Amino acid sequence: MTLVHKARLFAIAAHSAVGQVRKYTGEPYYVHPAEVAHIVAQAGGTEEQIAAAWLHDVVEDTEVTVEFIRQMFGPEVAELVGWLTDVSQKEDGNREFRKAMDRAHTAQATLPAKMIKLADLWSNTRSIVEYDAKFARVYLAEKRLLLDEALFDADPTLLAQVYQILEEGEAALQLSK
Image (cartoon, rainbow, N blue to C red; front, side, top):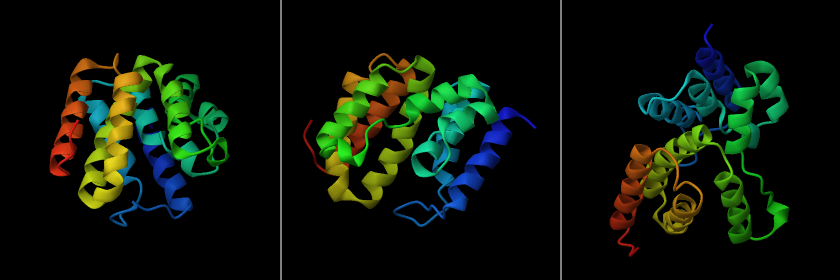
């Protein structure tokens, strides 16, 4: 079994075990990591990056730890998942402060992790703009800060595509930059 296939099966099982579904569509949650993994693969990501794309939300959304990811998938995949996992907790303060903590963490991430983060933004942005215009206004502003402050040095082609998606979302919501 390949690393990517193993990660796919694990992510599907982990998200399904907690009954997680997509917020706006009710689809099985694994639809999102599948899309992120596909974007990473299309962008030329390594096997480890594609595996981490499948696993990128498992630590935040289930009881699985980064250490368990390390045992199951090796240190490189675990490191990537660690960089993709938010460090803030609700008790750390208001949303603006927590997002600033998470941006600072992402800014320190490796370039391979940043590629996956861009793919995650691509997937989430389209969904949020389509289904939740009110929250999208907050989300798009936060993600523009993330791109400008933390992901500016990531894969330039993918970065340009994600900026385009943000701009399309802002236009659809008639937001000014």
